[in-house]
Image 1 (cartoon, rainbow, N blue to C red):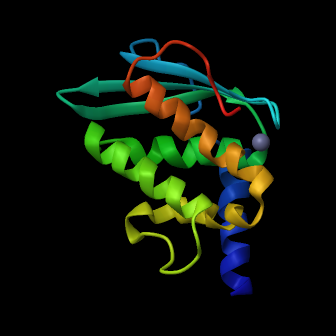
Image 2: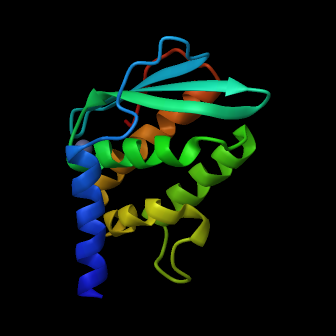
Length: 149
Ligand code: ZN
């Protein structure tokens, strides 16, 4: 179990140091901004949705390791997904970081399972879910800033 935990921490640290898809997307057709006042995390999520599928996803912002790794892993996982699949993933992710441990994390979450340990730190759950709340707003093209409070 300790090895697994270390591996997960390594994934989070790696995505924090070298965030994937960390760039403004000038031709995005969906975007939204999110803010987690509890920790000071800020994120803007950009999506390019074509024929109901997410062909590209990126983000910008500044935040703690958990919020940055979550946005990095999320944008990586979104590419090629339909909007419905993205919302399903959001629900599974939310369940994983807030729900009971029984049954474990859904296999479909892949690398995102690195963030499963967050549920043991309730004050960090909002860091982990910020990018996802912002994703939801982006898909709906809600332009009011999302806040976790
Ligand atoms: Zn944070």
